[in-house]
Length: 330
Ligand code: CP
Ligand code: NVA
Image (cartoon, rainbow, N blue to C red; front, side):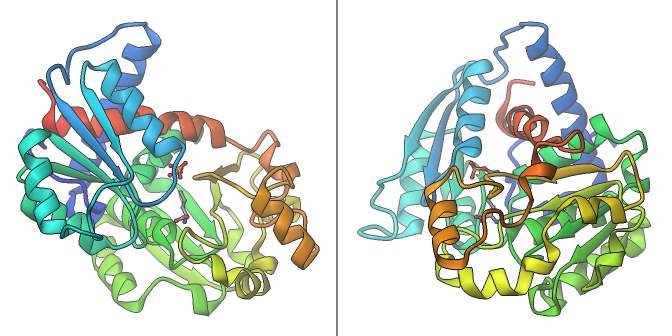
C-alpha cells in the first residue's frame, strides 16, 4: 500500500505506522537534497499556515517558517491570541480553520492540540506539548540515519535524564515504532508512566524493538546514541533543586561516553542545552547550586561525538516533510 498522509494531523507518533514514519524520513531526505541543490519549490504554494505558540521556541518556530517559505507558503506567528483567556480552544480552532490550511501548536496541554485537531477541520501539527514532541523525533531519527552506520532497527539509543518528559515519551514511542533498542536511563521516579511503557512494549512486540528502563549507568554499554534533554522542562521551573539532586548522577560526561565502549557513539540533544554559563538560567543555577553544567558537560557538547547542530538543522527538513505530506501539492 502506498503511504498517503494527506489531511492527517501529527499529534503524537503513536498515531503513525512504522511505514508512515519511514515515509516521512525518506521525504525529508529528498527535501534536504532539494534544498542543498538550491531548488526552491512550490509544494506548499498558496497555503496559509498558523504557528500558535504558548511556550518559547527558537528551532520549532524558525523551522516551520523557513520550511513553509521554501515551498511557497505564508505563515502567521501567533503568541498573544485570545485562546484560553477570552475564547475557548474549540472556538479558536473553528476560527483558525476558516483562514488556514494547517495549524502548528506549541504549548502545555496535549488536550489543547487534540482539540485544535478535532474542531479546526485542517491539519494540526504538535510542535511540543508537556507530553509529546513528535516533530523533534523525526529530526532525531533522520540525524541517526545520517550518522550511525546501521539500520535504525539495529540502533541502541540511551536517553539519560528526565525520561517522563515530552522527549522521554516521544523517543520511546518512535523507537518502539521503528524497532530500536531504547533505554530510559533515569532514577525510577523519572521513568515514563507505566501505561505508556506497557503500550509501547506491545508495539515493540510487533516491531522487534526493545524497551528497557534502568537506573544503572552501566546500561549505556553498547549504545550507538547517547541522548539527553534539559532536566527541567518548560513550565516546571520550580523543580530545579529536586531535579538536580535526582539527575546529577545521570549527566552526560566523558565518563559516560567511555562507558558506552563505542568509539563511534554519537551525542544528541534536542536543544536548548545547559552546557555552560552563557545563559541567564545557567548563571542563576550556578549562583544557587554551584554547578556550571547540567545535563551535559561542555566537553561532550563540543566534542567530535556531538551531532546536535545537524540535529537542529534536520528539524527544518523534517517539518517541511510533515507539512508537504499532509497539506502539500504532492
Ligand atoms: N528542540 C526544540 O524544540 O527547540 P525550540 O524549543 O527552540 O523550538
Ligand atoms: N523537554 C524540553 C524540550 C525542549 C525542546 C521542554 O519541554 O522544555
